[in-house]
Length: 52
Image 1 (tube, rainbow, N blue to C red):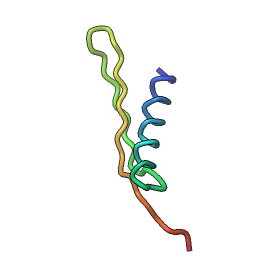
Image 2 (image 1 turned 180 degrees about the horizontal axis):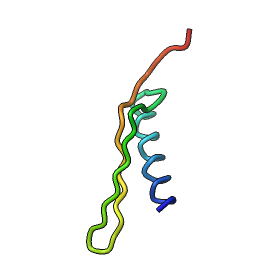
Image 3 (image 1 turned 135 degrees about the vertical axis):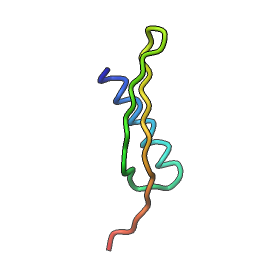
């Protein structure tokens, strides 16, 4: 479960970075069991900001 969570979060971070985001906020993790398989999905809002 922990490994699946880490993979989902890493993929979320990578996709946000590809779009030029500095961070992801409002992250939501969902866990589902389908036909004895675990599905973990992560969603959030990619944001970009400038430090001042």
